Image (cartoon, rainbow, N blue to C red; front, side):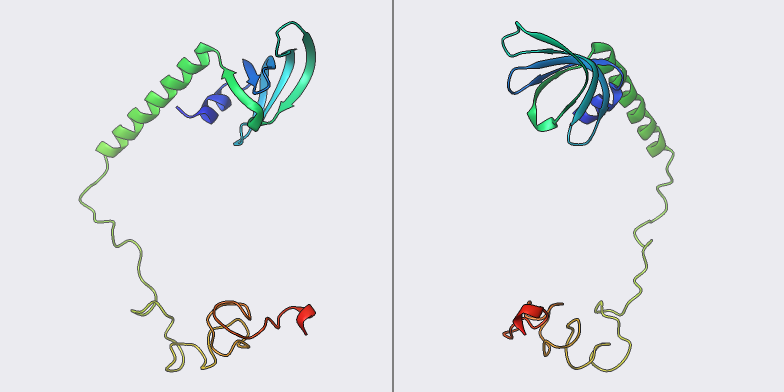
Amino acid sequence: MLPLYLLTAAKNQPILVELKTGETYNGNLTNCDSWMNLTLHDVIQTNADGDEFAKIAEIYIKGMHIKYLRIPDQIMDRVKEQQQMYHQQQQHHQHHHHYGQDNRNRFVKRRGGDGRDNRGDAAGGRNNAGSGRNNRDNGARGGRGGQGGSNRPNNNRRGNQ
């Protein structure tokens, strides 16, 4: 079960967050993102020793500081049920799929046999000066002057003129 999936299911529910410093935050989860950054509201903060408390209206906690999360068991149970239903639907969908069709040739090759666009002259659609962005690199491969094998200095920058 993915932690982010659990967190999104726990929105507007009470959770406990323990930081790497030992501080704990009990509050309702307002929001979370893919980096596990959390926003809690109606929060009670407890220091690392557990002897000082503070009430905070709202707090933003960076995911990199989180050591531990406690989510209510009812959320865990609900997420497990949702995942089981999802897997059952996937299995049901697979059994009713038509396997007689060959889907390997869905994508049609639109270019010539060597992968180049063979329009134009004998050089395979390219001019004889090479494939550089503006053909100043005398046939060296690479989009920018100086990169990709050319021994010439980079003339594309104003400081080198």
